[in-house]
Image (cartoon, rainbow, N blue to C red; front, side, top):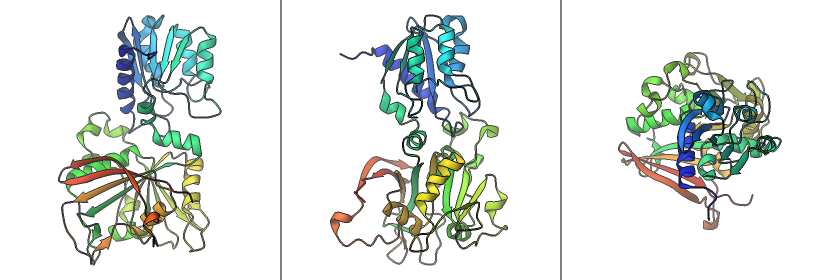
Length: 369
């Protein structure tokens, strides 16, 4: 028999929905929601909106006020136990006098995991953990991966015709997909901490690679104001230093990090093929720039390298109802495969129409390196 009631599931589901509201503004912090109830009635709720600002529990406790005494608090992530830019949330719940805390999951940081729960239990508060944990984990793939592995969560976006071509033989590619798919991409960009591309892609497309308010879907603009829009860092692999100041990239909103072997904003080693070390690049972006989540928009060569090196966590592929022929440009670069057992297999997570285009979300099945 489950230790959680139907009401518990209902309240945690509400906390998870609240947490989702912060997904465009909280980075590098996690998305967290909190609901406080008395006799199964909601008396306070809130979510974390931005790093450095009050956490979800603080907003919910402010709304509940005196009614928090003896209440049950539902939180999507273990209440913090340390002083950062804000006081510990575990301490706030204790001072408010809640009697029970139900949490979806523990803190993924191995240095602090469980400490918030211990503080609550030592104060005489009943604590239960594990309600809708998978749903709560899905709120923060980047935060969790960085905490657990030191690497960012990497989403690779690709767009092609139904026969797998990304451009005509002369390089023309605008627009393969429809306006709804391009809006969808803007929403994905808005949730990322960085957009990774190459100088070749930036120069060929004169791309700005930022988030544009007027192109966001309504479900984004309904929950944030223009002033809250957070621009991801544009990370450009520029080994040969070909980026010039007249490109739109340098005249649009958002910070820029140029990655090179030397003379860049981030200097990394090159491999035996004289290519920039992608694993080092990702690791250092996570460690030095606190980037949890990277959205990749680039050509076939970088896409193929990331997949081949098992650095992609999720593929977002848009297929347009168009045919471009074998003389077009392919979706990913050569992988050098000669055996069927070596092909990259995918777990399809979602398939849906976005406008006239098909969007496929897939996870590469990892093989032993």
